[in-house]
Amino acid sequence: MARKVLLGVSASIAAYKACLIVRGLVKAGAEVRCVLTPNAARLVSPLTLAALSRSPVCQDMWDPSQWDMAHLALSSWADRVLVAPATADLIARLAGGRASGLLEAAVLASRSPVAVAPAMDTGMWEHPATRANVERLKSFGAVILGPEHGELASGRVGMGRLADTEALVRWALG
Image 1 (cartoon, rainbow, N blue to C red):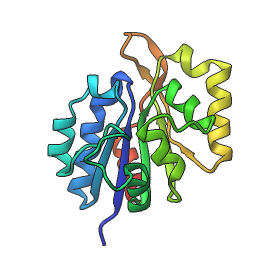
Image 2 (image 1 turned 30 degrees about the vertical axis):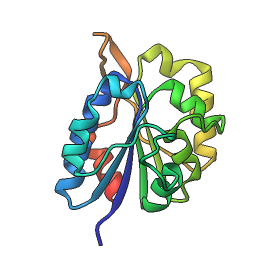
Image 3 (image 1 turned 30 degrees about the horizontal axis):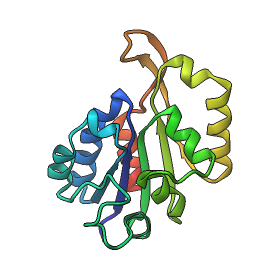
Image 4 (image 1 turned 60 degrees about the horizontal axis):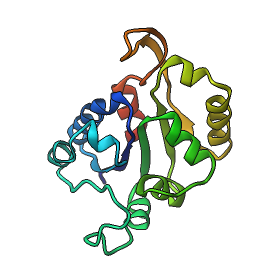
């Protein structure tokens, strides 16, 4: 039976790597559905992710075409939930139990294993609020994958780079 993976994408510049994750999952035989935050859709095209995943991309909890309460349908459908990349803002919303958007609501409603893959600038990653939010997510049972040390979109080198996409795919297929 194919693994069913819900991939949540937030508005980090690393959002383009969601395409690599989807390709890796589909190539391995997984079914993939993607949820984009509104700002993530500014960085990676919903059409691109739909073509790669062979499934519609969900973006809005209030979309009338999602008659089946998308956040509940998606969370109950998925065997695994992977949020990659996860911004400091999204991590804070999840840690606070906020469900203001489709992605947050789907993660909070899920009873499947959840992994969060942070991607942000080093200063944001090292901020005490982000560190506390990550620890809170861990206490809720979320797996934190990364970030890694390396070159960042800013041109700086430091912690905050999205974890290796192949490692993220391996977790999702686990």
